[in-house]
Length: 155
Image (cartoon, rainbow, N blue to C red; front, top):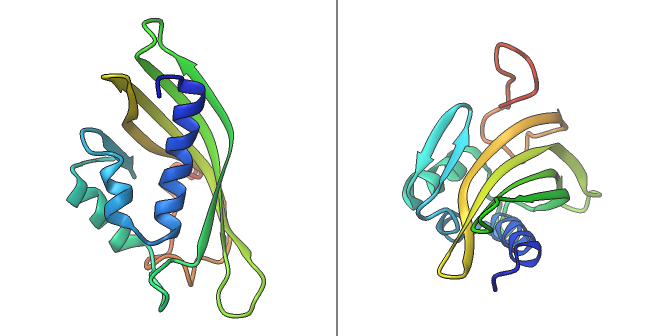
């Protein structure tokens, strides 16, 4: 599929589905040949990216983080040559533990770059951008999130 307006949102949704399923290997594979930037650190390679999530996200008895990542406000800007694109989107993570109602764990932004090679769109770079707010992350994250020194909400 070569249409960026269809392929890129599908990649965003696929990432969310894999993370919510606890399939960190599958999610990391989406970035094979690309990178993730988290906390100012650039991570490359499926193993390094998988470890980031394994070190950060709690997995529950059902093998998932018990989350639902909602991706919204997707804005795609194609490069002039049509083979690259910048994408900004917002994420909201819901989590349901036990019989309780789903709760918002946090909300923030993704800053992505995509490339098209051989007619296929793929992630080139994902930067975890500013976090707008955190909710109760005690059942979601292995370590409590903290703000950088500049306290702009970025991890």
